[in-house]
Image (cartoon, rainbow over all chains, first blue to last red; front, side, top):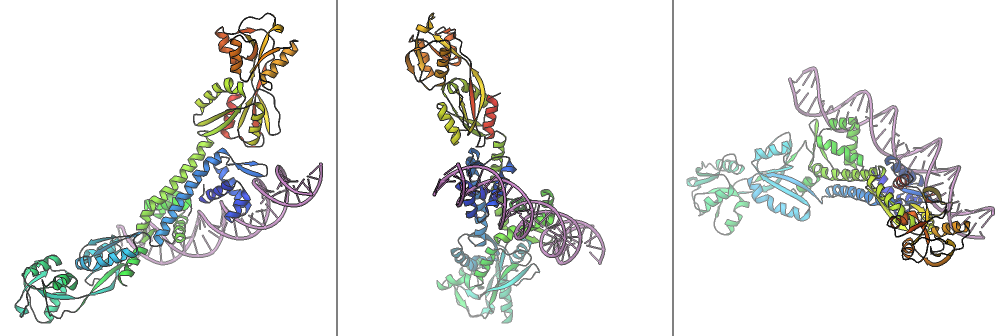
Length: 279
Length: 279
DNA sequence: CATTATGATCGATATTTTCGATTAATTGGC
DNA sequence: GCCAATTAATCGAAAATATCGATCATAATG
């Protein structure tokens, strides 16, 4: 039993006329006749009576018509499913990102993407840069977004948005060298960039507190525990609200990077997201 | 999209291994590879990642697997439907029969047939011999059963059971020539056979009542309206109960006949019923 | 680094489908 | 009642498709 045979059967059964059906199917009458004969012979049934110079459905043929229609309809659903995927009407993208990116940069982009492609599900997991690279390498995620340069033969690093760290404090600070510092944990991208910048201006920071998240650092700084540097994305609101003040320390801008697997295929949905994020 | 492609896809997806799947499908690896490639190219999607020296389902491939299974399952249902019909597990037979046959002879046979083939529906319509022949000719019925010989190029008359008419009365009758007769309507098989038999023994019947059914005639005779001749099948019970007495008049046995269409195909179910009825 | 396993590819072959033409049967018009 | 038109089946040829066998490139394995 072939889908093509079923389609031909349906066309012939609906018309009870081979030649008309053949015309409608863009087939020759002989091809149509052969297809029906093959269907009948293969399953050892008679679907049409050869009555006079025409044909007529047998009782079985009449009963089989809805069956045939159901099979073809189900197949067309499957085709539509694939077409929807190819047309980006559906799909899913598994994202991994490091903290700052995941919490402050990606969400509005994900929202914007979702408005353009409402059928594509986005799943985001937060992990550090190393684990994100691992996830891409293993195929556990489709795209990664990190705030450090990282290199591997398994993926390509694509520069994405620029980020600016700003030094903040609850109150104005005059002598930065004497300040107490609150910092992210060692190994975080934010910490690395900050230390590098302080080194360049000759400050050896007095680290009072080491906290594992941007939010914790921000809360500590607002509470007066010391000064720190955080992505502008993180402190935008408290700066505007006057809870924090910006201290002018020149920190070079850093980049966010997208991680795109080299070995594995990047699905159409993932590519669309990447294109959207990289503008 | 071909059912064969879907079957191959399912086999490969379940194993995530082309060569194994090819073995299981009794295909060569190249044929399997080509089928997957055709499916992917035709619908412009990627169902497998070529990872390392193996393959792995893409997210889409994973989502498509149940779709593919559903299509194949639906197709297998349709195949099973045809197989059931070919195996007489299902079907329907439209029967037409004249009164006596339909009311007294066929029912036990239909019951017996139904016990052997419980999946085959039997539909019986009562009509006179002429209309029954017409129904067969037009294809409105699959088989006919009548109590008169009737001829047409559209069907063949097959002798079935023998029937015996018996002359009955409520009370013993000595002078049959003087008796009052109750008869079926002109045109009925029973009436024709009876008149012929009476003619042979030189009796011109005094017809008092003409009734349109065996049951009406039987009731009239039991009520004492006169004598009549009815199929033994019709009077078996009242004879045994003593409501009627049998009067010895030699009436040649008559036959019931099956009508089988010549032009149209006789379905397997109809043929099975015919075989059953003709023993 | 050699070996083994895997999927893709290629040319050749087999199979299937489709075509074009013909035939047989049947209908409908004259 | 005969003839033209219509229809489905059939047959051989051609085309399209599927499959095979062999080979290649790649990547795990030891």
